[in-house]
Image (tube, rainbow, N blue to C red; front, side, top):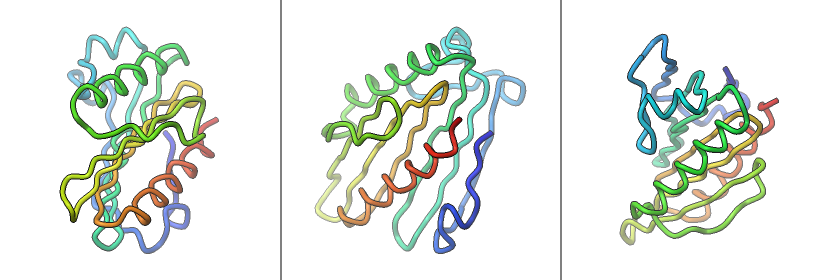
Length: 155
């Protein structure tokens, strides 16, 4: 499983929780875009998620999911993007050059809150990050910085 060190994520970032799941640990593992049976057909192997905080900024690594093949990961990526765009997660801001395919979505919740979702695909790994913040400049740069660090770890 892919792991970032404290130095890589930044010493000022506090990790609030971490979770690792697979069909061995959770036979009913599911995501908002796919249930266990669909994940099995795509070759899902394992998932890692965590929640971190820097100041009042919540950065959630929603998924780092490993699949048996690139084709399975690409199917999961497509399903995740489709789910987010159809369920009012915000306005698509395009690709940001991370991974082989990526999408950045921004939603202005109210004048004091923004939510970003960044999904990317690299090899047989699907990564989904989410960030909630009050500042646009901090949000987007922190999210892209963390995605870049994760991408570098994927072989």
